[in-house]
Length: 139
Image (tube, rainbow, N blue to C red; front, top):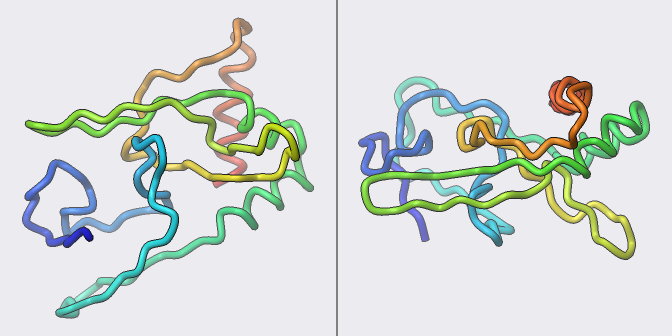
């Protein structure tokens, strides 16, 4: 169980009072949390809104509207990391992970706060532009 407060007890955006954009949690873990339940013990006097998005639906829309962008996000690996004084977690995954046999979407990993600058691109420079364009269309 995790307890979150705005006291910066960890070097993570979750422990701030800052507004967080759309993201998935635990992208730097090999096996991220599958289900999270939020329980507010003390509501904020101001703010405190939570933005929730159905990432599987967003991926489905991308697949139907721009198959090339969808395929790009299932191909290119991105490195995600979390570092603080005593912990370092780094892992590499695709933004959209499919089952290798069924090709069904299995996981979505999208977090600009935890994304490392290292992205594993194919050799062609045009693929770099295609990746970022695909990521922008997904979001």
